[in-house]
Image (cartoon, rainbow, N blue to C red; front, side):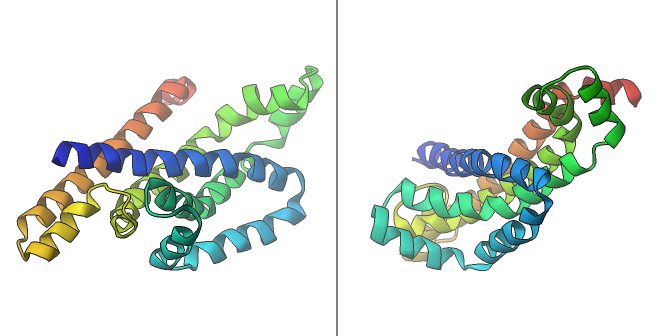
Length: 200
């Protein structure tokens, strides 16, 4: 049972973060291209971030019913603030000379973004991913209230039975999962940025 809940919690973390990244990346590119778009975009994402998670879960129940989808959408919304901010900062931090050199070499905009700018912005983007991933691991425990499963079920079980052991197990597993995912993302950054290894 605990193994199944752990797998569900991994899904409750991976799906929202992936969905959030898919949404945040094009929005961030638009904000980099049209600078006037960034303040309202980050302001709206910040406003969504302040909405209590339980309120969003309850609102989603009326749309999707009980289940994992009801948890994934609100959790993805909470990732947008950090992902958009870090992605925009990553691209804005690239030296103008690098962009001009790519343009002088005849790179089209799409190729320039994917092969030149994205690798340079990657450390800042992954830093945002690490923050959102660890945060989502914690927030996903609340999603048990809408029947999404995960390690949060151990906390509700502990409350219902007035027996603290399941809560302790859930706490330890959630912390271990957060640390493991954080280290995994750090390893991905290390693999994708070999020039930083050579520089150090």
